[in-house]
Image 1 (cartoon, helix red, strand yellow):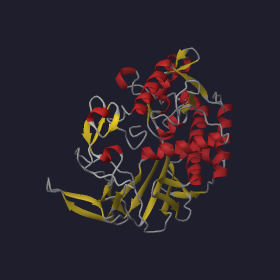
Image 2 (cartoon, rainbow, N blue to C red):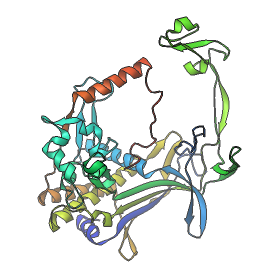
Image 3 (spheres, rainbow, N blue to C red):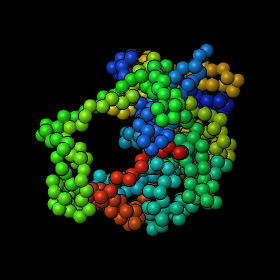
Image 4 (tube, one colour):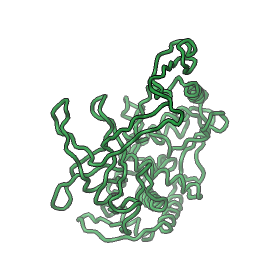
Amino acid sequence: MNYADLAQMTEKDAALRRRQRLQPVGGKGDKIFPPTYPGERRDDPPRHVYERRRLVDREIWCVLVDSVQSQANRLEECLLHAIQDRVPIPHVVVDFSKAGLDGITRITSLDAPHRVYDAILRDSRFKDAPFMESEVGKRLIKAKADDASVLLEVSPTALLFGAWHSTGEGGGLGAKFARCLISEIVAIDVPVAEVVDRRTGEIVIQTAGRRTGSRIDPLGVLRKVEVFKGEGGWNTTERAAGRGAKKVRPSEINHGNIAPSIQPLGITCDYVEHSFVLSFAALRRLRFGGAGKDAAGRSLLAALGLLALTEQDRRGYALRSRCDLVCEGKQQLEVVHPDGATHEAAVDLATARALYQQAFNTAREAGFKLSSEPLVLQPQEKLVEIVRKSQELALSGAGGEDDNRDDNRNENS
């Protein structure tokens, strides 16, 4: 594939797609662990996400291994690595290096949950003004599909993976861009068990696999030992533990044995499938100021999508603990024509990088103000202070108990 081919596809075809089979790195049939999600009720155990999907002529049980939102995050991470290799991808950086915060030096528009419209960027400064009150910020607020030029110049990944200025004009009716790239990983043909819920009588689908857990304390601390936890930390007397001391089990201060347990978690499957779709029809909804700029802008986004895919192929599919996957052969991309017909298109990492560089240069020639250097913001003092106070609370052991964090960084975009 060359740049002329890509530009023509972007303007005339329906999509680029690939369905790549994967297997556990331990071999076919090895157990893998998809993400877990909370049950419908508060006391429900964690569970995987099961779906009945129709493949060819039958319906089979499948399990979500990596969601669309999680895949978008991983693809953005791959693009950050490409940036480190000097690939010129426009993005925004909030520089925390002078703030003196533990473990935080910079956050980019490829890290932030809501991309370029995230609160981290909104609560930072560009030059002497709050970011959204700067000239660039005002353009971002007004951006629409009919003129998305500022996003292409500042943060094209927001157009590729979707973004929403949820605190914008009209009570959340601000700039909103649907994703043009869909990537998802699903386990196919998973053995399941049908279990009757004792409380409701409903039939619940769960994995036929099991995860075991236990811990033997080398110190031999017994459960019957009295332990108290208060403002002064933990101790063996209520007085020594300080104000607000309460009696707790040794396991709550990370001492003592943990009894063996068995949970219905972990799966086996026939194979895992990574599906990738880059929609040219979705790209054509975006406009950038005229025929020539429209074509150049869309081609740049298409090249960026191919770059993200091939960068992920290079890095591999080590998704989480005990979920390390490897390709089962090499499946080529397919160009999908408007009538549904397809033909194969070969794109490797070197080709994808060359395509992107040419698309970047062509977009510059078309009039886009593209920079190989990031747009650098400085955090406002109030943002630094809220992070500093959070870190102090965490170090004192006073925070974190009520946190409710999603498995996926950008679940709603």
